[in-house]
Length: 322
Image (cartoon, rainbow, N blue to C red; front, side, top):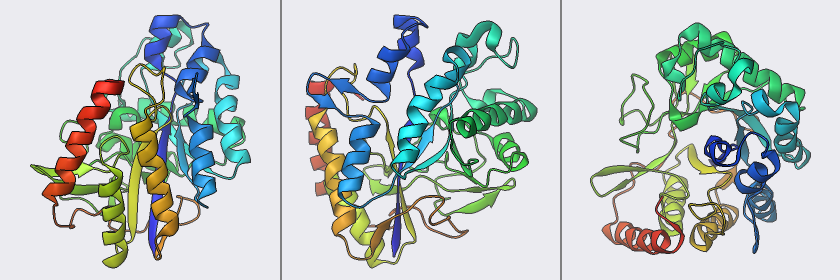
């Protein structure tokens, strides 16, 4: 069986705080988490609806750092519905909230955009704070982590090991310009132990010029379904897919992006309808060293890639460039 990890980075928007002010918790939740529009919702509740309709369980990497300005309630609003519906909650972390927090910054005057800008000891402190907020919201102690903007370095891996977090999933072999600073390369596409923590790379497939990461906005439903079927046929252990709580919206987060929303629904249907595939989480099926996490060995299809590029151009013209 190929285990399919549908992972959703679930986060409020620091950018919207700059636009709307620190008092706009409700609007930030509506536009970043629930993703409410005039045509309905497209955020975590909708994503859970789609997954559950297909018998799937998701992994929600939740960023608790907005609690520094809004308190525990901001985290509770996100975590409790996910847990109530039986999905997995793990730790996501965007350090840019430290600057917004001002005097509430636990690192005092230290701020930064990504984890690798901090020392190992500072990263330990941030991880411990994040875990505490999630546990207060009712989540089990996290066993997996993904950094905001994938911004880890080797010190992060040591910090995670010190915090008893077993897995990281911030290495993206198919993304050339990510903020990941691990001493790993695009050839590292399998689960491996690195600096004391198990790294679970984001999946990828071959495209024009190399690898392309397995994200809902980055691959067409045709490409994702092809990757899934290839993984099952070749007995690949797992397919690690990334999405975001706001990913099914337009760029300005005011309208539903029907193209991307259709991709998400189509992929979930493909997982449910593919014999030999099943959804999994870091809790239900812990990754193992040596597990391949994507379909990078699948032969490149120029036709599928070209069709996706055409679809992306249409989506960008209708909903804003990603």
